[in-house]
Image (spheres, helix red, strand yellow):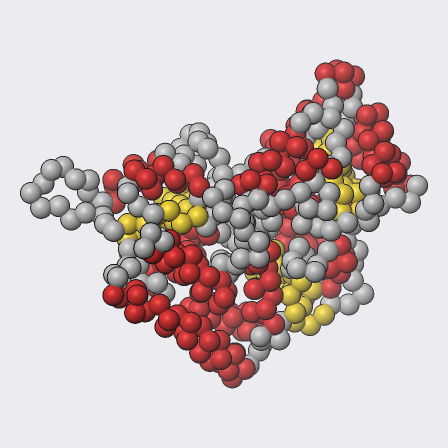
Amino acid sequence: MSNFIERPRYACALGGALSTMRAIARAVPIVHAASGCGYNLYNTMNSGSAYLGGGYCGAASLPSSNVTEREIVFGGEKRLEEEIKTTLEIMDGDLFVVLSGCMVEMIGDDIDSVVKKFERAGKQVIAISTPSFKGNSYYGYDLLLEGLVKYYIQPAEEKIDKAVNILGIVPGEDVFWKGNLKEIKRVLSLIGIRANTLFGEGEGLKEIQNSSNASYNIVLSEVYGVKAAQAYEEKFGIPYITEQIPIGYLQTEKFLQEIGKLFGISKKMIEKVLERESGIYYDYFERFTDIYTDADLQRYAVVVGDANYAPSVTRFLSDELGWLPKLSVITDILTDKQKINLEKNYENYESGLKVAVKFDTNAAAVKKYLREVWEPNKNQKYYDALSPLAVIGSILEKDLAASLNAPLITVSYPITNRIVLNRSYIGFNGGLILTEDILSTLVAGR
């Protein structure tokens, strides 16, 4: 890993908490931070998330204490109390969440004591500490969920058998979060699992409140959502498992088999579901085989992305699309243990391919790693070029792709070159959509 972060692919913890709050209808964030923090973070997450939008209460409608030099010197608690009071009068919401920024945390504002005044008055107001020095926007997602578990979600009277919560898909940071949650919910329902995705289509505060009745939490990440799952386990006794996001038929097949085994679902039922889904999936897949072979659409690939997408996309390219991924770079800040766990996801490909895996927060380092895995042209008489090549990553790989004369397919944050609504890259349907997007890029100039 490099010793600096060049062109970061995330915002701060406050930004992650705000983008997650944006996914909850009738939940109103109140930013207690320096002037400009809230709107600047909205601009960052909106554009980088393929134009996410302000949601129920974001963008210019975002309440903020906007502390200045006076509050930094004398304390901002009085200003926060004034902001909460005004927000309760003006904004129509069912839950108000105070999210703190760096400055007010550094001067030691007692935010909890301010919030307790409103709690005693019967207002649904909670406070969650989200300064940037605690982590990036992925961590802000965990902090928000931990806070909701601690202060908002109440214990259920009883657990519901085969009910699960889906964690680890971070709204905004996962540009395709809403479509992904919809597809994972559909996929699990095929084997009788009732999934509460918390932030998905038609879900909101009621589903978050009811999340304590789950019998299991499924964290679709080796890294993100784990702290939230641990908070659920500690307070509500809900065990959890971690899984990489499944992209395409083969990964989703394995995912369903593992979840079925966890819940004791009969193999016969799962096989019946898989037989039906495979018939649908490969019927669509068969449609492009003529153009794939006639136009020779197989490519070498370089994959650059976060800990959720890079491993799953790389395996999909190799095992389902028949491509030749040579390098996969994971750009997140990770511990050594997390790196070891993620490297395991690059083992035992169906294709037998071995992919070079690198961890680096410096986007410019990708070229260096590419030279390590493929000998550069030194004017040899005969040179086996890394061509044709495609780059799978974010918009930050635009210059890299151009320098390699390769098309760029954006699949991970930040994405600014297209608008994403309900698109999904997870599950059976997600594999088909990803295939469409990749191959359409190759034939776009025809």
